[in-house]
Length: 141
Image 1 (cartoon, rainbow, N blue to C red):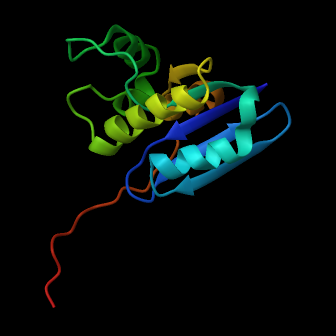
Image 2 (tube, helix red, strand yellow):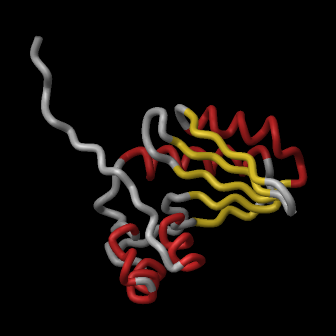
């Protein structure tokens, strides 16, 4: 079985992975377009599913039932399950673009909304430690 994952993280910080029964291949790339090219070069027609860290299920509410369930089930990592009205552009825009374009390349692939930090915690019982990036203001020379 061949599956992929895409984690949009902004300019230069987009994660892409391809996982087979016996191999994992991954990269960090500039944007969704390059991630899709990377995947297309490696996956071929055998790709079964793609997990994308973005909103693939939309509702007119801020508290989607699927997110509420995840927050209650995994309270230690509930802050990584974002509300639809509180996200950064790269997660929403790059993730959605990736899903739309992936569907064109693999019409029968299963597209699945994913939460990588929650999945890691569910499988290992440990949080992923992320070093925060802080904007310190404009530097004057």
